[in-house]
Amino acid sequence: AHAIQQRLYPKEAPQVPGFDIAGAVLPAESLCGDYYDFFPMSGGGLGMTVADVCGHGVGPSILMAQARAYLRSLALAHSDVGEVLCRLNEILTVEGSEREFVTQILVRLDPDAGTLVYANAGHPAGILLGGDGQVREELGSCGPPLGILTDRVYPTSRVIRLEPGDIVVLYTDGISECCGPTETEFDTEGVLEVVRSHRRDAAQRILEALYSAASDFRSDAPQVDDMTAIICKVEGSGVDVLPITSPRAGCGSGRSS
Image 1 (cartoon, one colour):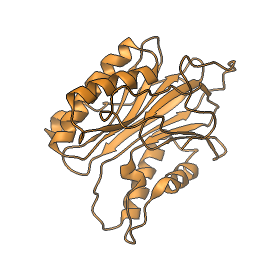
Image 2 (cartoon, rainbow, N blue to C red):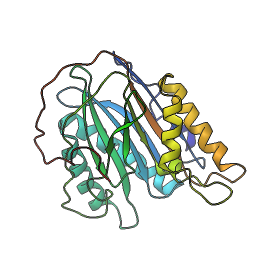
Image 3 (cartoon, helix red, strand yellow):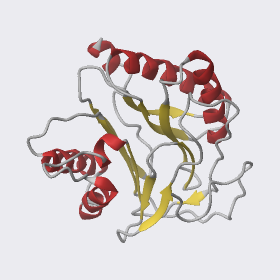
């Protein structure tokens, strides 16, 4: 089962001109409830997602495989990330139970325009870190986790323009809620500290440093949750684009919680 599940994860990060991308999952057990993925979207652009199924083990791993398959199919038919999450939520709500849910952040990267949009279903906020180390945007939640309530709306954010040196960080709470010996959490600040200090490194090196720092923070305590992250670093020159109005209501400008 572990070998089969591993085949569901990307074999390698996509090669996108002007961007350096890496992703990985570190399971707490042989079967994992987290997943990450890269895939083409309808109308062009690259979809990037990180999701966390409640729990880990056999049941969550099966739900993870189902959600992944549905997501990829929906992304080929719909270009709007909020619409994709809305439709995925309806499917999971009908087929699942109230004890089975998924938190998920879905980003659509437009490499040609140098922009991104996102939708977030109850997942820890993604981070857009500027080249100066300051947080430019928090890609916060715009709705509840998937699979709990029907008829939910997951708004697509406004279009966010990317600059050279920007770093997009998507991760699961297995990293931020990792506990040390004193029961303190690694927290978002721990994630930020690692990415800031390694922001001039390659995406894969940043990812490795993040996992290493979280594991060191945990010390001798066992890993109790899956840890998953995507790092997307902007390398190319900036692209001048006019502000674009999203076809759906935005998640809010600037930082959201």
